[in-house]
Length: 115
Length: 113
Image (cartoon, rainbow over all chains, first blue to last red; front, side, top):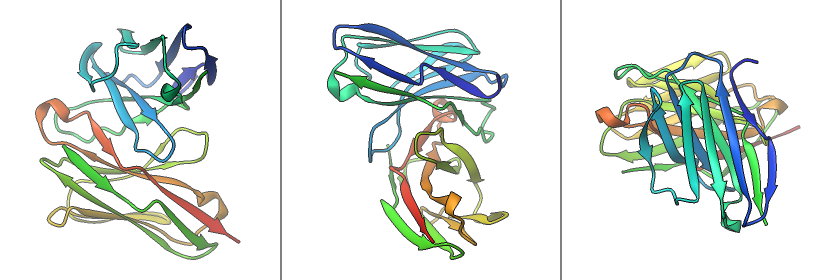
């Protein structure tokens, strides 16, 4: 595997279900990100992990719970979601240097549908 | 906070040139990125500007004017495969945001035969 991988690619779940999204990066990066992409709207940053420490939580509802066990893996645990949470969830990683440019590499995303 | 504006959609014919503008309002600035995203796929990096001027990469060029809060992405010799959404993203300046990007909503480019 190369780059950033995400599983599953598609997920349909009911509002009472509990599921998890998984992201893995094979690039040796030290930062990982979760984004939400809804139709016709900008990518919304949800969470940032830098060296496994969460450095950003962009006022995301508690029904989304991130976990970063190491610098290569990132999870997004989902429970009691709402239909408006249906979106493409993108994971990204980058090598963050002091004020250096740090291109983010994206995974293919998980298309989530909440019924 | 930051506000990133770009047109929603642009249409051009194969072989033509298209310029996608991006304007931003930010309290700090430390670089502007352009990404390409085909439907159902991951965004992929196209270009990065942090100093004023033009960066050229084959058929794609990106320009930045920091004083005007303005950038454009120029796509030359358009090909059908260039039909995609093009995302403008700005990186903030503060030490706790040097890893964070703020994205525009994207410009859908449609290339017609």
